[in-house]
Length: 330
Ligand SMILES: [Zn+2]
Image (tube, rainbow, N blue to C red; front, side, top):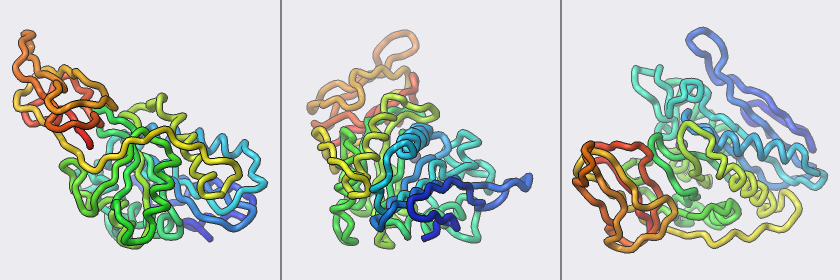
């Protein structure tokens, strides 16, 4: 089986770069591709990171996981692991969520699926990822981090949280093996907070009957070292769970499931003072944060509309009217 033309023989590891277009100066835009081919048949797992150019933690998880897998005894490795550890080089080089230089507005790669083989560069990358990597794989694992300006508790997303395409057991198994503190079981077709996900990789892959598990961990623009170990350990666990590598699956610690995200917004702009941290459990009416004027006077207080856990909070010290001050999930 070839992935964007990259093929490995039994027991081999192939690491290369496959061109998907050219920059304005004529140099190639290359997708890095790593293929670990097992010594016998088995499942195919596709692992991806760096689809958003400001997200670094997933890329660090991939390289550390690959380093450990290279050093591991793979004499009983079954199946095939295919990795694109940096899926959006143009955006990554610009240190921007999407690439700026297309039709004068940012293209968010994870909103333009299924992509277009004759479209803008981001659309072509989307089409390539879908056709060349997701379709031939049994399961896809996609590593993300929080949006710029906020922090998020690590979670796996099962989207959609139904078994219409027959992949629910596998997706649940991967999410459990990744051992994130939270699992989001998202109802088919619903928004993520305020975001329409109809053009996301997960939604479009599902339409083709392909399961994807999204993982969110870390902050924008930095490697959140705290979570690199969690990601690396989780990926080894996935290989054991899928019987691609020998060894027992480490039972995950208790994972907190949620199905609803309740965004809380501020009416007053000003200095944001959090009273809770990501991962905290909160009761209805518990104070989440306050807005303080520049002169030190509290002008608004925010409370939890429901009982649940704090998944996301802002990192910026000042926020404007209408900005989100927390995601409470339950
Ligand atoms: Zn992302």
